[in-house]
Image 1 (cartoon, rainbow, N blue to C red):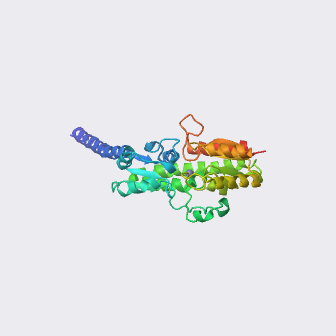
Image 2: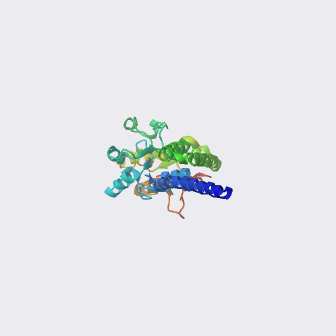
Image 3: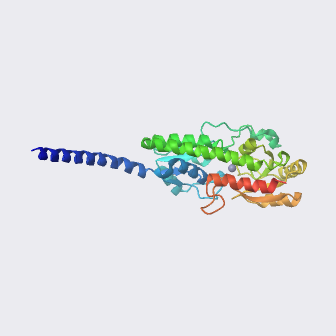
Length: 312
Ligand SMILES: [Zn+2]
């Protein structure tokens, strides 16, 4: 009799355990089915650091493309509509997205990674035609790793909205990544310290290194394209002014970004005798096995190029 009762209890326990296991299944399936999409490759890498192994992150934009002039295909729009969460840089960086966002499914969560950050003022002396730049927002926050801390926090909060069960994992991954960002900041300060302050001069393709310059004590002598976007071409007069600025400040190098047309930089170089450094990564990480396969690698690689061009 006792033995029979024990068998019943055992059967009951097995039933309970199986029921508990079954109720776990749909939850796990939900989470692994979540479609996570980030617009830019550097952003996808940051998101992947926050999700860890829990979710797989896809990138919308092919690597090496100029996001300022990106034109989405119908397939890109379908990928956006098909995702559960979409990460964008924000601050006007993805102007092409505005119309698409108006028509996305209601349940799709859109996270602006830079939400809460204040745009730097585009400094007047950086341009001779400053009036045009009064209302410009500079979206390139990520080139200062201390600002990417805000990105990681926004990403974490967005992920918790679509996958509350993963909160602990996302929170702990974010803390770990923030520490890596702080270490990166210290690393950059140490590396840059070999460049004398008076040699910390940027001539770049477009206005992308503002936050980096602010953080690490660089001065922007001028940019070939007078904009935080990279769409417009400079006039002959603007090019002549840039040549004058470069001579007056003793600029040492012209820094080009991957994916940009080097023709104007080479023209400046011929005119001034100032060398061109070709491959800073700004809008895109490299393929795996390349020079900058992650956001942190991208920053380290750029700093290496700056140090080798500008240190005495
Ligand atoms: Zn840019």
